[in-house]
Image 1: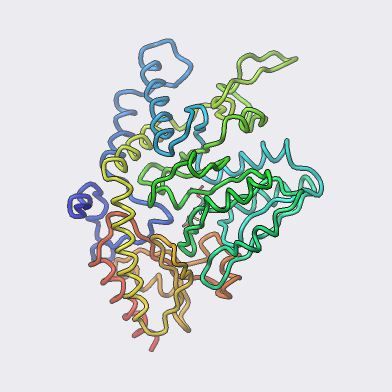
Image 2 (image 1 turned 120 degrees about the vertical axis):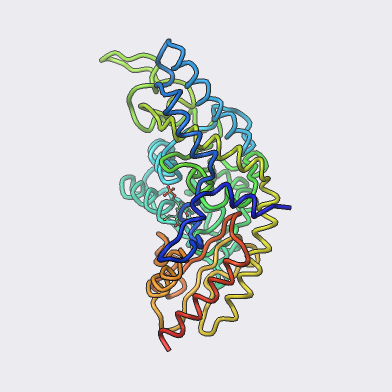
Length: 405
Ligand code: C6P
């Protein structure tokens, strides 16, 4: 059982007042708040440990390198990877997908080849593939979703062809909350010899992930959506695949030797980490993993499932509210429209009540097109949210209705 009152004490920002009202933070899919331990880890690094890594022969640099590499180990355990060198630090989920599109894609995808994404992807899992297709003359194919916001598995299977070079799908939709049957999706692709990238940006703070059990080829996520700092994220990739991929960016730290005639690249994971990385953010990410570990992701999943259920029931009682994303298998996202009221107006009125939700297309415009709405309002949950906050959201929505009566 989670002690939410104790957990909330770790997040100082939750005591903030907005427009004179206590903050109700329900925009966790955009970014989560940071516990004290994460903020302190970043501060501690700069105050007492700051040095560049992998370069210096002095004590501070050695210590910083050790701590940085220690976080890589933590991430390996967090996603249950087999090898530490399968963990690459990047700026976030977006950069991780671009890295795979540009390196795996550059070396493996040719004219007439196909890349398969689903209709519920975030732009980060569409645009890098479109850019690759444009460059290579390849074709982007889209797996359809049903009215509940679920991937239509039969159609997915039919879409995999001998020309399919990669399937790239989200573990959990940011716009709908759907949790995809990712293990099944991966197995179907593997049966036809096609590798799979999983966008775990939304999943990692809600459920425990085991990349070996899933057998995914790539898994990507951002620290800032799992209580860590912005500007840092992770690409997990199977060693055999990543070893064959050319580097993404060139520069310091990714080489073994350089002459004007020939450069030899470093081994994994350094081959993909050119330049001085976001060292302080990696320290913060390490603290975020410790935080999640202490709370226990299974406890989080259980608590949030109950809270999502409570919130769904509550919101469905609001007149003129239509929920977008009604999959049986979903986590902490409530995306909705209110008849005749623009989602931005909903968001603005809720903001005046101190309630932070996101309004817009959530960087998933094809999802909006699929449900024929220009945008939605989205309340997204994290482990520190409470039933009382959901009640305040419901009251806020009744106020919205009153304003537009
Ligand atoms: N979604 C949201 O409000 P970055 O920006 O690289 O940290 O994450 C990109 C990304 C990729 N995939 C999914 C499923 C996502 O939800 C996101 C980020 C935020 O929904 C910001 S647009």
